[in-house]
Amino acid sequence: MPTSPQIDPSKLNSPASWRDPEAKPFVQIEQISKKFGAFTAVDSVSLDIYKNELFCLLGGSGSGKSTLLRMLAGFDKPTSGRILIDGVDMSNIEPWKRPVNMMFQSYALFPHLSVEANVAFGLRREGVRSQEVKQRVAEMLDMVQLGHLAKRKPFMLSGGQRQRVALARALIKRPKLLLLDEPLGALDKKLREETQFELINLQDELGITFIVVTHDQEEAMTLATRIGVMNQGQIAQIAEPHQVYECPNSRFVAEFIGNVNMFEGTVMSEDSDSVTVHSPDMDNLIKIDKEHATGCAPTQSVCVAIRPEKMRISRDPMDGNTNTTSGIVTDYAYMGSQSIYKVRLHSGKEVRVTLPNAIRDMGDRLTWDDSVYLSWDSESGVVLTS
Image (cartoon, rainbow, N blue to C red; front, top):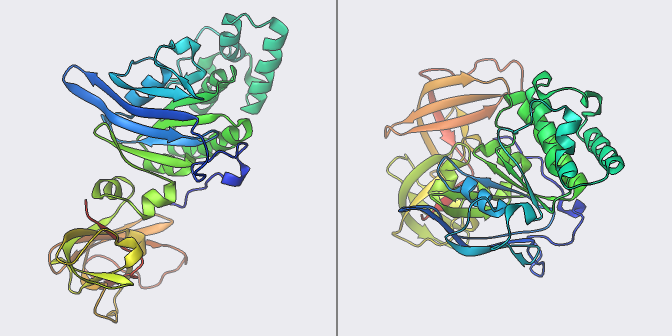
């Protein structure tokens, strides 16, 4: 998983922050549930989002993330619970009266209207005078770098350009809160990565609170100030991207975000600095720093999560009787910036190791059927109790 470029919290226009215990949440979701017949799509979710955040709701299909977004927009009514935006209860406020706008995955542009007419549509419906509409549309199109395409129709634009038209139309009414449902899902990989940075810069410049729904882990890691990981209608973890990746609070989160190797075992001992785990999959014991092994005790069954990039791989034996094991390379892939190895341990368990290709000529490269040794540092693993 690549390092995520994050917005510097010091640049946020408001002092309100998830890090400030005195800060008042801008969006308050209180015990929200939504049922469709016997099916519970969202189950007692509580969540605080702060002003000027770019918050991502991340989850797979059916996790409840889009239903939660639709309740924020007012398109779906909660079965129970309530939503407050800027201190106002939205329970009885219709969608068009909320200080919210929504950008849909399909973009929903009017095919018969030009770019500038699409962007101006909401303002004209509200009766804003023509001169102000013209000025605001021109400013917004310049902001999304589409001023030179103002007269074109949507079918004459690329996917990335249509995405920016939809974003400009959503922002032109200056909402307090912008909801984005899979906003980059229709773009190819390279364009999606470029547009992510544009979205971050635009949000930072405007100072509008964004809530983004996505199923793409890398997209969430890149965009978000914080991520809410959803599973079966509930929030599994809320944290900053690096915390979700480095310190998942459950096996589900660890496996959902990026790639991870899991070793099931039993806690053998603990001291002030570390916890030692025995796993039948390993040749030796696993040692983990105490700060990454909270909430466990001797004889307890646990799971140790280790990211592939934190493992070392070599033909030479590793020193020590903890955090080392050995096996055979069963699969290998050269990915340009990195190489991926699958190694079958003597126990039969298969693990994944990722190495950066920092040197152009790596000489005698490891390959299929090579006998190898693996090792990692005690700070690399995380003990999971659920």
